[in-house]
Image 1: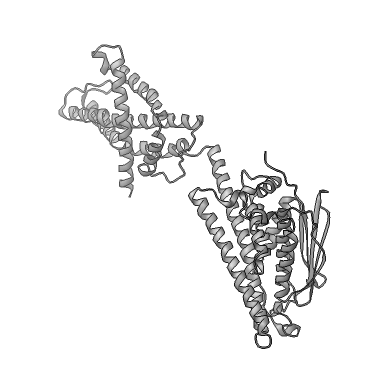
Image 2: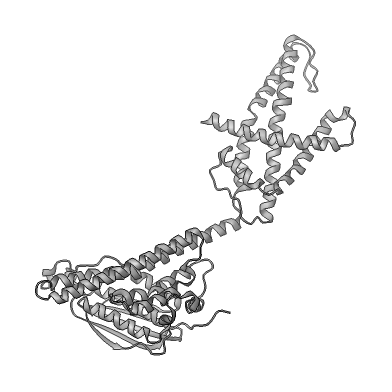
Length: 492
């Protein structure tokens, strides 16, 4: 393995030597000196220095960086990160010049060791062995001692000439990450790109949870309710199956939308990311005409699930920008139906009907203001749906109180306060006999696994300037969300 590595590094040095020798010869043609002086050490030294300095300008040629990075990885065995910037800056240009100079210099030194030092060392040893006078500038004593010194010096020179490529290649491998590696700006761009990809993953996870996760929760509860009344109420069972069918169909549509968005992002085509909230508003219009349980809740909430993680991206717009994007009629597939001022109230009613059909004893106090915009209503309906889903998860049989009222947020802006409260499941909820057996489909459905919805909702509300409090409260499960009503404005 080491022999192969040294062989590749030697080849890299010889490439630099070939280029450097060409530059030296070209410069030699332009040096105004006599023919006899061209082989003098001084002239050769000046030629090599000039070749290295001027040869570095080759690093400014487009495409040289790519070639040098490829050669460093494959021939020098560099495993650390090397970059080829899409938009090279001044620092990258200077790095390219310096690296080409290093390549030429090390290559010329390695070639000089083999073509000059090695032959001179061999001649010195042979002359000393034959007893000829050693013609050298070094102060070698005459006589027997001088011959021994000449042999030793010649052997040392030969060894150095033969092994010089190894340390020179190691030096090149040491310098490559420093001259071809990422700059501080490159690392920042990479970090921002990673943060953006992570924000995309979080956004998609929230979309899946808020939409499909809610749908599957409703399907699970409705299936349990249908099984309970299968024998004595076939009509209710048929109704539950119909809702399961429509809810599952809408969940598949949401999944298809997410997958299409992923494909768009991978191919670089315009995707729904820039106006995920807008598509939510459009979907919510379609949800009003659907018969399923989550058609209202799932579609009405897509906006809040999509806009939350946008704020974590490197170039994420602010909340008002997200609102204006969503209000763009060109980005909405829902047409006028998505902008129907009565849509938020009807979607809220449909969400409540879905949960009631699943066995929830839901009692409403308050209502959504009639002056809400479609997007504001979509956000509120999504949050109501998520809070009711968590009431399913954490609550036991009993009335679920939903309160909606207008007020002020933490910073004094207009806001809506949504409160959901219902009896809490006892610690032995997994054992129905611990509290008299299942008394509703909510209990019989068993505990619903999850736990990411409240975290995602809290992050979104904090992004908008709102708050979320959820947890057990004196034998009940209580969740309270303060949702600021973001101002909608058109983009300039």
